[in-house]
Amino acid sequence: AQGKLVEEAPELPAAKWYSMYSANGSMWLLSPGAVWFRSSPASSFRPLPPLPAIPQAFSPFLGDPVLTVDRNGAVLVTSSNGVCRWAHSRWHVINSDSGLARDDVTTMLSDHEGSLWVGIAGLGLARCLGCGQWESWGSSEGLPHESIWALNRDGAGTLWVGTTSGLSYALNETPAPERWNSRAELAGKMVLSLADSRDNSLWVGTGNDGLW
Image (cartoon, rainbow, N blue to C red; front, side):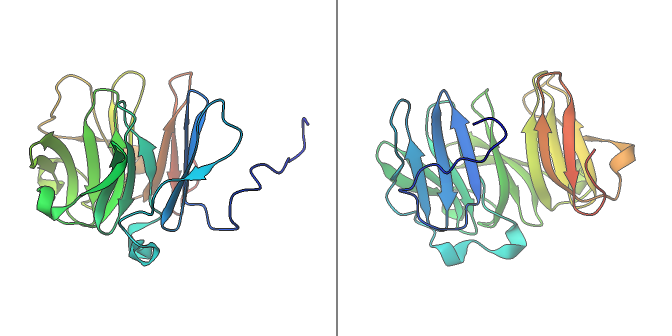
């Protein structure tokens, strides 16, 4: 009912819920060690097979793990063991064996162009080129800090990167920017979350400096 909270999905366990994702009426939920899925028009959630990264692998210094679904329908979950990917009825882990500089993934973005971007703890930003090849950016390419907490590509195609010390962006002019620009008003501020709205506004959540 309008204005009231209604209990849903009694089949779900009493657990900490890290992340949610919805698209086309379907919904995915992430709890410690498990992804739950409800397709449209199904009425209940069901769990996927257990994540390769056990719950203890979700490290506090990486922030809460992130769940998303790419344009091909693969489920992606961050962890301190890399990125767990569910596709073709099995889990696969994208980690240092797959060319990542380190397994500690803080955030990620699978954009509409099909690119997978990941923040690596203390090592900046990386984009998967396929076949174990990655392109990376750090402070020498203009990022204000190499600890990445949030990623967002807005409706105009601009890619936004939230770091420990500010917000950077690259216009959608080339698939791989050589340098990143920064927003001066957020210099020195920890940017933890990013979201764009239908009116093309960018919302920025910070660690100690409020919502912008």
